Image (cartoon, rainbow, N blue to C red; front, side, top):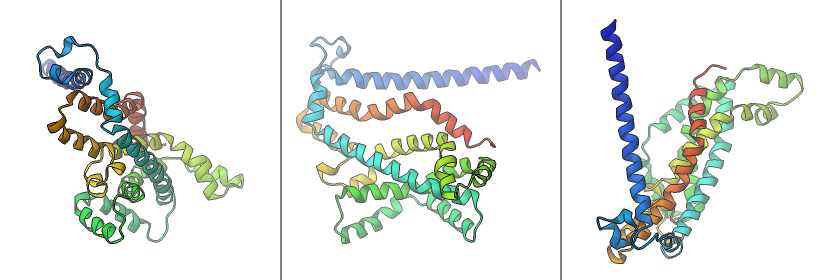
Length: 282
């Protein structure tokens, strides 16, 4: 009994040490990038970067925002992310509710089709999609990119929301029916607000996924004025070979990284609650 308890304590301590090491490693990397964004290019490659002998270079952020066109990439990503996340919720929530609460001919077939869509790698459908978009002369189109982001993330959103709607009690719908509320009104006024933890968690997941998406935007957004932050940041890194403005590049990295970092810091508890709520029978 004592040996088993000691073994369990050793395993717990080892786990805490690994987690602490990972957190420390992550904070060191993030801190280095942040300090580099406030340093000059010469200081970044020296051994006294953290001394800030030439002062704090906040102008790196101004140059990154204006000169490096980070503002354009930032606003593009913000537009793509907000519109796509909203469209995903509007499409996936009613679909998940109908599949979870009603039994009709073809419901299992539809669920299986969503499951099959989850198993298809995006890289397999990029070239056919690009061929269709090219034939229709819709490349470098913001609406096409938002449509693709929405369509690709809907299957996961449907399956994620299925768990929440299945675990909600039927008494809410029965009470609404007694009061004369139609099924559509019951969904929008009662059931959807009850699934708020799932909606918040799903929105955060989609926001992070779409904000950091690179491969699809690289194919469908070739022009500077439609590029999101991931592709724009990659092009800035490539241009560092000629400009040498490393302080501005790290400032760009901080600007791009900041929205998802703040979102996760302030809403991490909602993510945990949302994930666990879907597994609890209501």
